[in-house]
Image 1 (tube, rainbow over the protein chains, first blue to last red):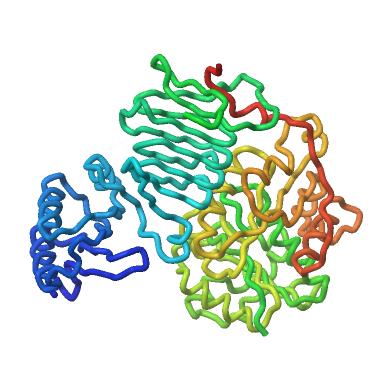
Image 2 (cartoon, rainbow over the protein chains, first blue to last red):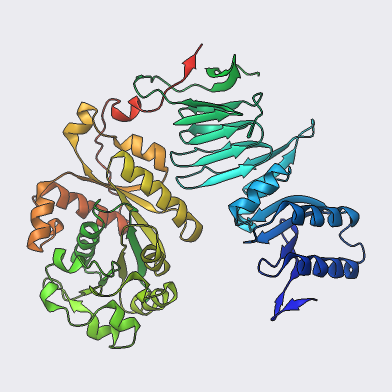
Amino acid sequence: MVQRGGVDLFSIKGLKSGPTFLFDDQAPFPAVITAVEEELSRANGFFRDSPVILHFGDRHLNKEEWWTLKEMLHREGLVPRYAVAAAAASRELLYKEGLPVREHLQLSAQESKKAQVTAAGGSTALYLRRGLRSGQKEVFGGEVVLVGDVNQGAEILAGGDIIVVGTLRGVVHAGYPDNADAVVIALNLTPLQLRIGPFIARADEEQNHRGSPRPELARVKDERIVVEPYQGKL
Amino acid sequence: MSGRAIVITSGKGGVGKTTATANLGLGLARHDRKVVLIDGDIGLRNLDIIMGLENRIVYHLVDVVRGRCQVRQALVKDKRFPHLALLPASQIDQKEAISPEQMRELAAQLKEDFDFVLIDCPAGIEQGFRNAVAGADEAIVITTPDVSPVRDADRVIGLLQNSLGDPQLIINRMSTQMVQRGDMLDQQDVLDILAVNLLGIVPEDEEVVVAGNRGSPVVLNEKSQSGQAYGRIVRRILGEDVPIPELNGHGGIFHRLGKLFSRR
């Protein structure tokens, strides 16, 4: 095992959520890459074809570094499932590179409330069996399905559709960054602001709308976001 | 003995954490429980004033943690109940003067001698909050029925759920008239958003301010509405099933927020 001052440059942890690759976030990246190569050659193909979680800690990853790593993982037959990165810049990069990203590694109790499913069409959805409170944010490259409320001050950023089985009060962005075909569905759709692809809509502060909540669907029509009753199909 | 350590927190300042801590402490003491109140607001000490004990302080929380005195030397005995004590905050130190680990040890030590350890949390979600929460086994979140305190309470509940699980909620300063006029969030609005168990509602009451200035918390005043509300909350904390009187309005301010874009 390659070490730097007693710290592993690279290690593999068998967590409940799957094999997790932990990369040191302080050492120069080439040294980390060397450590990864050594460790994987020792593993002798054990992880071949397994979906793995990549944990970058606080590292500010650049595009070149990511491509170097990505190519090596590809050579070893490893499929990244999602990445965990504390640095927002790294998450942004990985997200744009098409890898689902998270800010924290979800462990045991929480993990059981959170799962990814791959739909028939090949798109991946993040399933969240809990609401989001103020200050909480989920970023995911695919669709997001959430059972619970999304409160004011909470945020969801999704590459695809966002479905909230509950009240949506916070800010959501479906189809990030430019997919205008994405939709947002909620049992009670009262967001402060709603974005789909490049379009933004804001709550009307003057309107006094109430009555019993009904499921609604927001989508882009003629270059603007419209909200309509959800009638059981898209 | 192993007591219950409860942190009283809110995120936002000025919603009544310290007043609630004092009232719950006195209320529990009146039910013959041994209670210690920890003022977690290092640098902005207030709980001693509300309790009317400011002239009895010799040592404080930071002295205890730094080993400058024994815990029992720093405990200020209440003038009404001998089994109620206050561990005051330091007025001169910073929040960083103690660590979450030290707070945890202190709370563990106090739980051996007291039935209840109530920790008055400072406003905010930084070090002072982390310290206060570290010592607790359960949490009470306090909010007023206004939009911004509710959002801050929501944030705090999200943070607490990672460590202590679901807190209980007290809604403070509920004004019947304003709710009935529809100018204030009502109980159901607040609970819809926060989705946690309601421990009690304290009505808006001038007596609270007067009592705070006099150092004689309202729970001691049988005639005061808010004092009675704290009395009920105390009984609920002790496990009694006491119904919560409803103060509901007819769809007001909150219902005006929200909606919407162009609809078809």
